[in-house]
Image (cartoon, rainbow, N blue to C red):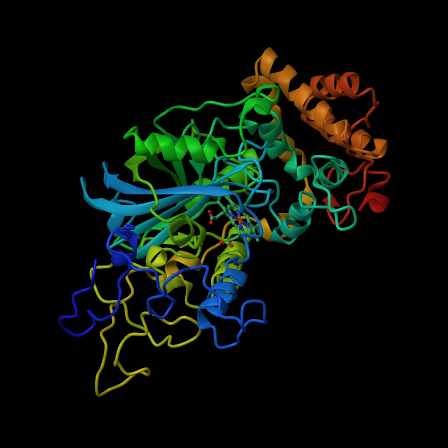
Length: 536
Ligand code: HEM
């Protein structure tokens, strides 16, 4: 429909105009709005001659087409998303001053993007891969992004390893083939980095292929800090439990799913009003409890290869979100959405977890590259605060909300207002527990505690057998026996039963354990005494 031109600012289009676009009352035009008689009309000399440079319509058309692609996400490129609303059901204001958790019944608009990790944007969304689970809560005090996964742990605790591990799942630099054809690089990395074994058992077990995105949980994985009004803080991990329950696809059955199954399943369920929802909880512990957990149980809260035992640290429910709105335009609302772990609101602070600390840098860096310096101004990334956002960032490519005529420096003539900091940063960040930093690259016996409990106590006989089948099937594409021998040595530290089943299934005799192994760039804290020097 024609835009009313009544009053300042209304001569510009708003995003709502675009979202409501239909084919009715439209006119075909060039990008500057000039009516064109036909999209296929080209200006040329005579009936068979060359084209004319003055033909803006054709140049406009082709040059925009030439620029349609932006870089896909370097990881998590294949994804699906939707919008919805979070409702606080049980305020936690004793623990956290964040506005979003402070009042029962308080609603907060939000968006979610689910994804696989390794594949490209056209890859299969039922791949055996962790799932990304990103949430943007548009709170009254700015956007809070929870950039989570569907697994509570991760492959590494040293951020420097992340690009290496990811590269093992990208196309080979020489053959340009994916690891579907060759799992050598994947297992080579894992057999050199035993701290990944907990995540490997989850990924290769029944939970490795979720049934679409509706039937899976989300976990911050990282330890965060929650700060209350008194300035006291606790460590916290965020959990999002699917109200649909969990459902998984077996390796055999996965061949029957189309490459866009998860996208279709999410989109269609929302379209028909079957809205998926998740219940959100915090798991918390005090600094003292974290120190005790390290001293007594060798669980380091800054190490995301470990989980916090739920019996000791129960979940405390705080709210629920429902996804009830599909994107109208996928590119504008899902491809260009930018989730960032460093988007935190007052009351939520980062812990000293080194992987989290690195992610705080990496995501906005990626967004400036992938979307552009003014990515925060795009409608899907912009805020819904109850005050007008003001700062002194100006200009740059595609500046849209450039803050009008306001002075672009800290002016005493037209001052802006400031709010006192609600969190005493010295108090919250002045204290770090345990020896997380030196711990980073060293493999220790406690790295096998949780995977052992998972294998021996959680997996039943059928789950164990499927795990072994999945892994030995995957390893059939691993071209080097030495890698399999090492990986079985790592499994032996988890459980003798797992190692011997893997030996049977692969026909490869593995190492006795890891005490005589050396790891690329990783300190072996379990090296045999006699060979300690050599192994380190
Ligand atoms: C996406 C880096 C670990 C969850 C990304 C992106 C980068 C990145 C650069 C693409 C961002 C974009 O273009 O928008 C890293 C680094 C890590 C790391 C350097 C470790 C050092 C993790 C962990 C989790 C995680 C531990 C979960 C607990 C995600 C998710 C996305 C993502 C869910 C997709 C976000 C979306 O849907 O747009 N990561 N990542 N990453 N990462 Fe990580």
